[in-house]
Image 1: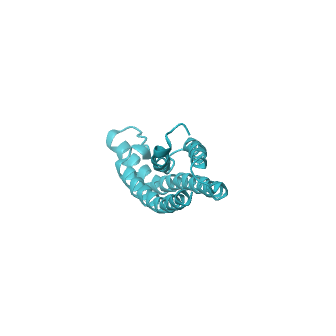
Image 2 (image 1 turned 90 degrees about the vertical axis):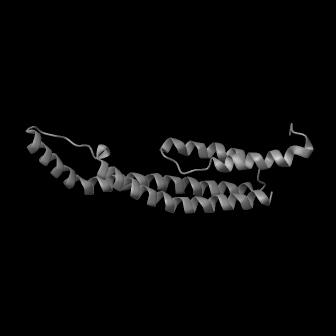
Length: 143
């Protein structure tokens, strides 16, 4: 309200774009807290607060599911890769004459497979995130 009347719409649109650009897939559970800040900011910009509240509730669930799917993917790939890693440890132990312990996170082959699967998972969730931002655009344009 401290902005001159002739500039308010421009400032409002700019704020909306900044808030919307900060809506991204979380990397950790702590990133979910950002949703509350984005929701509060958007409440000042859209008139249909009920729809906005429901959209953010669904988005929080969607983001939580994404984080769970990420964790499950890492666990599953680690479990599947374990026999191959143990075989490599055995070969290296024979080669060097002492026990060798390999970590999947440092193995280039495992990292590549994990990266490929993560990219596929992120692609699926980014499509859904695109739908959320499109819905936000509609809410903003009606306000």
